[in-house]
Structure formats: structure tokens, C-alpha cells
Length: 149
Image 1 (cartoon, rainbow, N blue to C red):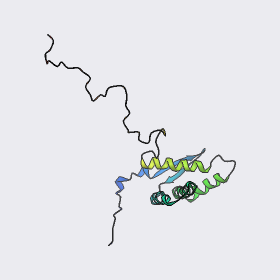
Image 2: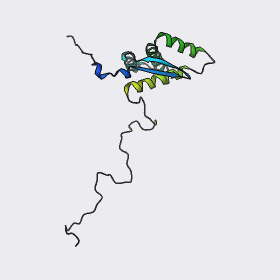
Image 3: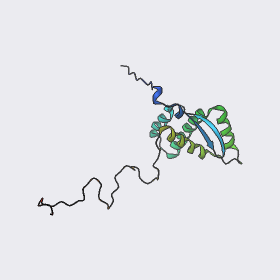
Image 4: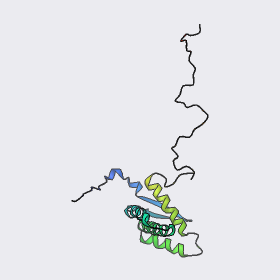
């Protein structure tokens, strides 16, 4: 039995301005960035489920994220970024590249990859207050149904 999946995405669903970004990193740039396909990143996030240690998972994901960034920046810009990371006098470090990865993901997806304040995993959850809901009437009605004259 064969399964066939159509993966054609109409151009109208992927706006042109969402495919490229200009990225400034630690005081230098802009570096042009073109979003590569996300398949390997999604696959990596599934693959780490079988890994035993946190260090092994982090190392593997970091490698995949860096490969994704390398594809997006292109050979010339990536060579410059690697040169900067290896230069001890340059403030750019691998942590900046991971922040860039997360920022690019948020910009591309249109939603944050983590909670904005780091406190609530579900910011949409109802927060109770002492104030009455605007959906419930707070007016008192007369039980007798008579009105004052």
C-alpha cells in the first residue's frame, strides 16, 4: 500500500517578505537571511525523544540549528560569522547565533517560541479577579416587578 501526500503550498500562503530577513549580529550586519525548509529541524525535535541525556539532546539540536542557519545565511555570510565566532576579540559567540535562530523562528512563524514572561505556560488561561465579569449583569431587579412612581 502506498501513501501519497500533496505538499504544494500556494505562493499566496507564503508572503515574499516572510522568506527573507536582514539580520544584525553583535554590532555587525545586516546579513541577508533566506528561510530554508524546516523539515530537518522538525525531524530533529522528534529524534531527540530517543536520546537519554540532556547534553546529548542539546548538542544534537544545536548542530541542527547551526546547519539551518548556515543554509539561511549562505556560504559567504556564514563564513564571516564563523570567522567572527572564532575571533576572541569579537563579541559574537555561539549563544548569539542560538538567539538569532529563535528570533528568526518567531519572525517566520508569527508567534513566540516560548512564553513572553516565562511564567505561564498558557497565557490564555482565565485569570480570576475580584471584579465582576462584564458578561454578568450586576444590576438588581425588583422581585415584585413593580416600578417606582
